[in-house]
Length: 253
Image: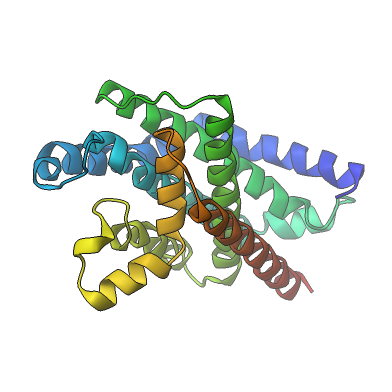
């Protein structure tokens, strides 16, 4: 991106963030559901699930963080869809601003909103007993993975917002992303799953990401899972960006 495009993106992102500031229930809503799921699994199902020597709240937290990310970025799709439908995007295109700055503004807004939601969920997890002796490097690795994943999910949200024909369609894209952690190692070990389900759980992107974050927070060796997690995050981010930009060009040509 050029300096001009960065400045335009920052200005438009400030506009979107002001909308969120006037309606903070957006962030509260995206944090509330993951917190409710965490409470349910820890205090209702946690006693029946063997997480080994790790407290169940620590075991389940990485999956909850991924669900939080998926729920947060769904609003990016909604906001972009509403901008397209209201005609504000056409007005922006008539102005002397960088063509893709509209998209990057929504992406930056989604990343900031997601970060706030993740901090809220992490704070609740600490109140529930989550503790980690991980060092600065491990925490930076966790933040980096979550940031890459949020970026990837946000670009898929951009694709959905540009391709949807209704508000419901724009928001519904996140449902598969929210469901994926439930068919992974996020809540239970994959060892006890039926064969086909276990195969899917072990070969979908969520499992290596969850296992890597869990190992980093527990100060355990990451091994090859870390490279798998990083590879998935990069591949999803690049793929989402390419599809989002292609949809933008089709929509605005």
